[in-house]
Amino acid sequence: MPIPDFQTLMLPVLKSSRNGEVRIGDVVEQLANAFALSDEERATLLPSGRQTTFANRTHWAKSYLGKAGLIEAVGRGRFRITPLGIDVLAGKPERIDIRFLNQFPTFRTFQGKNDEAESAIVDSHSQRGEESNSLTPDETMRAAHQALETQLGADVLDRILAAPPEFFERLVVKLLTAMGYGGSTAEAARALGRSGDGGVDGVIDQDALGLDRIYVQAKRYARENAVGSGAIRDFFGSLDRFKAAKGLFVTTSSFTGSARETAEFLSKRIVLVDGNQLTKLMIRHEVGCRVEETLHIKRIDEEFFE
Image (tube, rainbow, N blue to C red; front, top):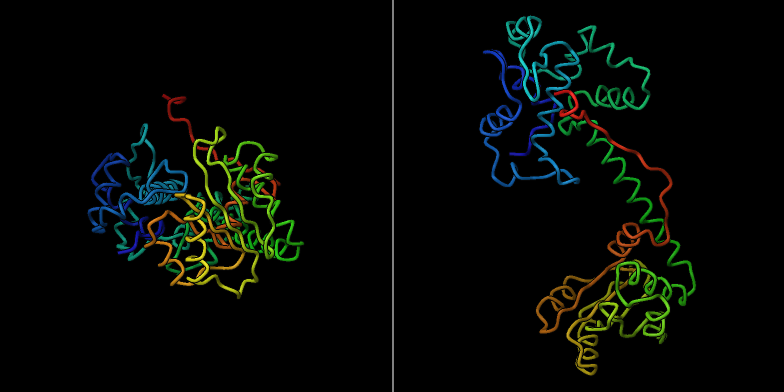
């Protein structure tokens, strides 16, 4: 089954404490078993790689229950149910979610804090109501970040296609050097300086010392003009002529299924980079874009309060 969202976990988390003080780590394990999560689902990590998605959602469920006064912290990683929480369970609710928690004054106070960013996140959850894909506040931020990067990627690709062919040559050089290939930009530019039919063909050092080399072919095609298997076989022939073991084929469009299959089964290692991956690499290595604002997500330093 899919990993439960954090609102679905609120009632189980509250029930886990009805018999006394519990550790949140134990609750995570108990609920993973109760929801019959697979090993893969239990191991799924947040983008930060520091916590599993299920543990993160369980912690958020605990946090929101605490804001409503249904549970209280009793030490590092430990909590217990409050008299109010006991009364809630006595009512045998079918589900506890943000809408349910709004009946409690302390939770409404939490919603009404002056921190506009926090309020906006909570309000967004309230508007989602019973939608199945209920995100935690940090998941909401990551989803918004992904949406911004998707739009940025589309804008970047539009600018590439509108620029002259020689701009694409400089772009390939800049990206490869930003990724650590080819030594300096000037050295890489000399290696990739032979213009073809709107693309770039050349050899670039895999490392600054030139211990290994990669043959590069780049084609600036319109989005609808996908690269087929014939172009991959031609590229493979070029690798043979240059006695190269590795190749990189970059395009602003896409690759057909047969092109990817051909690259997969040829005897030389050929990496295909389509327009979507190209823009993702540019964003990751800050080529053609820059950081406009940095947001820091901070958490309690448990050791400070020991």
